Image (cartoon, rainbow, N blue to C red; front, side, top):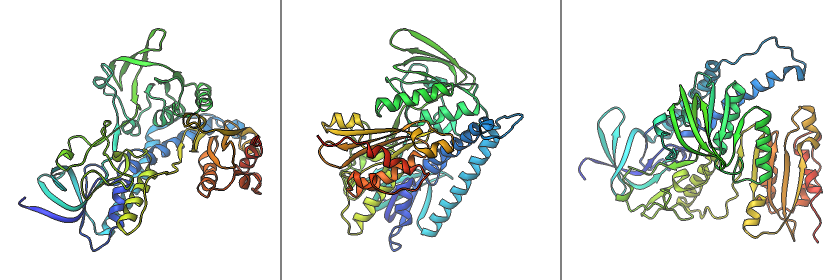
Amino acid sequence: MPNTEKYDDLIIGSGIAGKFAAWTRDSRRKTVIVERGLLGGACPNVACLPSKNMIWSAKAISLARRGMEFGIKADSLSVDMAAVQRRKRTMVEDLRKIHLDHTKASSAELIYGVAQFVAPRTVEVELREGGTRTLYGDRVFLDLGSRAAIPETPGLRESKPMTHVEALDLDRLPRHLIVFGGGFVGLELSQAFRRFGSEVTVVQHGPQLAGSEDPDVGAALKELFADEGIEVLLNATPRRVEGHSGDRVRVFVDDGNSDRAIEGTDLLVAAGRKANTEDIGLERTGVELDDRGYIKVNDRLETTAENIWAMGDCAGSPQFTHVGYDDYSVVHANLNGGNRTTRGRLVPFCMFTDPELARIGRNEVEARRDGIEYRTAKLPMAEILRTRTISEPRGFLKVLVAKNSDEILGFTAFGFEASELMVAMQTSILGHLPYTVLRDAIITHPTMSEGLNQPLANVPAVK
C-alpha cells in the first residue's frame, strides 16, 4: 500500500493497557499510539478518578450536614456545583499533564485521530487536525475500551439522556435525577447527587441493587438509600420515555403490578457497557468478535489474528482499570520471555458508595452456583470499635471458608474503608494461607483491620 508508514508496534487506544504498552516498550522499537479521544483513556478523564473526586466532595457535604454530631456549629450550608467541578477539573488537568509528560518521555509517537483497519495490521487514521495517515505495525495492540450502553427503550435516545461522562461534568444540580441501573455507576452517582441536593429515583430491572451480590448486600444498600432519601424501584422495567433530559422527562415504568409514570428533570443511563469494536474494520484483520461484540482472545490475550493482541474492556476482561493493567502485564511479560496467563485471576473490586462495598473471591451466590460447600461467618461493622470512634457503624463483614479445609473462599465487606480491609484477605487467599493465620494474628487496636479477627474467630468448626 503506497505511503504506508511502518512501525514495529502499533497501539490503538491509550487506556491503562495501551499507555503502559507504549511507556514500557523496548526503546529500540519504533512505536506509535493512536488515540481518538483523551490521552489516558476513560479512567483519569471521565470515569474512575473524576467520579471518586466528586464522590469525596459529596462525602464532605454529608459530613458537614452532620456537623452537630461532631460538635461543629454551622449556621448555613449550601452546595456550589461549579466549585465541585473546579476541584475535579483541576485534578483531571494535572493528570492529563502527567500522561502527556510520560508519553513524551517514552519517545513513542502519539497521533490523535480515528483509526480504521484497511488491511491486516494496517490502519488509516483520520487525523484530528485534518488529513489522513496510513500506518502499519509488525505488532498491533488493541486497547479500544468500552462505552455506556443505551437500551432500546422507546423514546430513550430521543430524550438525550446523560451517561456518566455528562453527569460528571455538570455545573448545575439536577432537581430530580432519574437513574436507570442499580450497578456500580448508578449507585455511586445516585448517592453523590442526592448528597449534593437532588431528588433521586433509581430504576432497577432486577430484584435487588447490585444484582450480582448476595441478597444481604442488596438489602443493605437499599436500606442505605432509603435512609438518605433515595427512591428505589426494584423489578422495574422502563417502557418508554418522553421529554428531554435537562429540562423535563417522564419515564413510564412497569413494576410487575402496574405501569407508573415518574416525573423528573434529568435522566442518567447506567445500564452496562458496550465494547468499542464497531466501525473500526476488524473484519479486515482476521480478528473475530464474540456474540456480545467483544474481541475473542485466548488466555494470553492473543486474538484470532497473528501478531494482534487485545487488552482491557474490549477483550471482554472484567471492566476495571486494575484488570486492564494486569492485561498489559500479561502481554508485556510474555513478549519478554515470560509465561503469564489470565487463567484463575483473583479480581478484587470496590464500589465507592459511602460506605464502600468491596469483595474478593466468591460470594455465597457464586459458591452455591458452582456447587462449592462452605462455612460462613458474619460480623456487623458496629462491633468493630473503630467504627464507634468515627460514627460509621453501618454495614458488615462476611467471610466464606471451605467446608472441609481452612481455605478462604471469599470475603465481602460493606462498611467504612472496606476497600482497605479487602487487601489483607486478598493477600491471604493469594498466599494460600489458612484462615486461622488471620484469626490468630495480633492486629493493632483500634483499627478497622482489627475487625478481621472477629468474624474469623466465629467460623463454624468442621463437622
